[in-house]
Image (cartoon, rainbow over all chains, first blue to last red; front, side):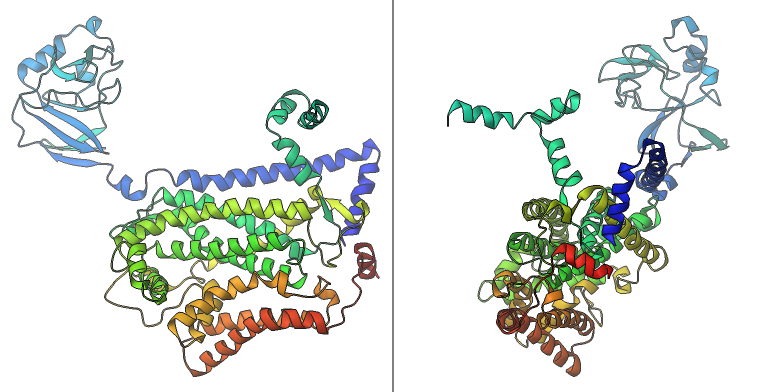
Length: 188
Length: 414
């Protein structure tokens, strides 16, 4: 059998150039099909590296806010990261609202960062290199602007979680959340 | 060495290519080697589809390593977590079921390809001089495959994993005097447990890559002698050969296509048919399943183990059944390689293959009267084949004059 195909190939090689493109077509289409097949085989493998269903199931967190007095803060874990929830005092709200946008490296209104003025919810991860800033405990240093201070490289955040001083490029991000009731929120 | 000779030696390092290809190749002669050993490598014209199974086995190995890496991203090697992490792969990880079923079924098809590959070597005399080392590296890989497959089967930490591991590791306790001490040393515990599954996981990876290393040796030794072929006659000229590419590459890909279509059918319609349902029960050191059977590819050797009524004797018989096969190049006294031209030996080899399947069958049956008897006859034939028939038939039979590759192909055409 093989000697026959061998002969066919030999003959093909000796054919005039006008016949050759037909083989090129077969070659090209075979390689394309093979390439598409190999690429689609990659999909399940790459996809398997994503967070599993069990991980995604933990992707939202519900928090009861009622134990939190004015001026107190709470740190909860959402998707493995700390989320800062701050029950802001009247003066903290006023400071945040009255700050001129010109003073802000990453200009953003306080009203764009909260759903209810007395509750601030931000991701507790410094936007510089991912450390967790200080300022949640009463004894912590809160930085020059009364919010948070990152001990790693000295970024200062204000009472709206906005970057004011230091190497961090952007404000602490606000995670997606909704108020289920007045005292209950769901993050994620 | 004179400077002329040195110059001549260095000149061979100059690449035949130009440009970037030449720059790399003159420093790292891989491109040259690939061209010589794979693109232009001469292969006998007369190969049949039996010769595709080495390549198919290699595809299986690549697939196993690929799926293994992605399973390893999610698997946790501890007695506490192993079973649950495998169930998580099956239920929660995206396409985890596909990757795990691929891994589990590819092993079975790796063994199918390897069994056929070894049968090919026996039937067409590929083990005979000058290919003894090719054959011995092959058998070594086969033993490592079995070790790797066994270790891998313990990792899901189901009932069959656990009790299979217990039974197989207890083989070491058959060693006189120091057996129990060795067993404890290997397990790091008094029984198969947390420390064992951790070690098994590491060794499963290690041995898999040891097989990859041996593939390199298998191929280097093969490329020194070139492939055997159905006639067992060496090619006498370039006319009796074809180049590896495109002839063999296309043919092997074609064979692999059919082979993996069959695998895909099992994979997608009967993914558990080659496994055992008890392995979906988490390992319980207090309860042994009613009927323990190893994976199907171990059954012939399991039958040999059980055929010998003595603990140590059974273990020795099982291991030496494969080791003895390694002696075949020297025990077979015939000058003729291929069974096509050996009227008596041909039936000995075919009977050996049938005997292998019979042993596989009885290995999966309970160790009761008739099955034990059959496994004893089968074991007896296994060793008779190697130690008596191989030397004796070589002397007694009168082989036909092997055809040259050209004449063989003409006779097939006629």
